[in-house]
Amino acid sequence: MLIIGSHVSFGADQILGSVKEALSYGANTFMFYTGAPTNTIRKDIDCKLTEEALALCKEKKIDINNVICHAPYIVNLGNKKDIEKYEFSINFIRNELKRCDEMQITKMVLHPGNAVGITSEEGLDNIAAALNQILNGTTKCKILLETMAGKGSECGKTIDELAYIINKIEKQEQIGVCLDTCHLSDGGYDMSLFDNYLNEFAKKIDLNKIGCIHINDSKNVLGSHKDRHENIGFGTIGFDNLLNIIYHEKLKMVPKILETPYVGDSDEDKNRLYPPYKFEIEMILNKKFNPNLREEIRLYYKK
Image 1 (cartoon, rainbow, N blue to C red):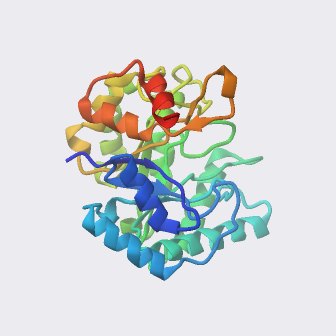
Image 2: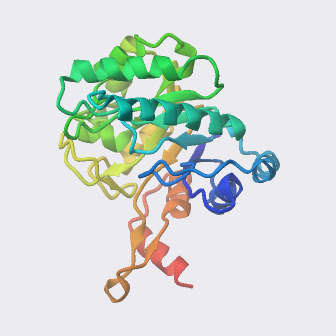
């Protein structure tokens, strides 16, 4: 069975609302932030809402072990020139893992960090040192380092950089990787040669470390280092290449998460944006590209 879902919201009903939104898309997993991805403001986890969400997951056969939390973009473990910000990031991520434990979430995706004003190796060392403070055996949730596109001073843009960090982690059972197809392509890895990527990953890290895959097409050419997601089949990676990754035999038990952009409305109502996930999931399950996807999304939500 394909394990597929998308990014969903975490609002007033917290993870219960997330489960309901995922089900409305025909998904059997999902990914969420426990607050806004661009800040560190967080509300306490409501245990009653969590209990209802877990019961609904069980009823609808969503395995909570396949559900993914994502840490916010605002934290940076790659630079400790400002030691207070570095320590804040460490403490914040540690607290996010505790929040995941409260909801029985076992995987959290994290952007490794940025080496602003320092060398890449120093940034990688800072990330590893921070993760060893965070992953101290007090949480059941593991961290999945996301593959990055290589914008600016981003760390984690190559297999070698990820391997460098991972090899320094003491609690190996608590560290893994989240592949992002858009980031990989923008970072210079050709997704039409995905088996080559997996072979290198297997040699330098371990395929068992892959805990999640973000499935996104890209608006950019190979190696552009820009990180701009596109809807499935409408970008430079292409539907067939993405389908090969989604259904790859070596990754069949890995959750696949869509982070594709919302679809805009026509010129007369430019402010309307609609989630594409229900339609993209159907297209993926049918294994056939739908060139009219965007128009069908607009018509569906304007009923």
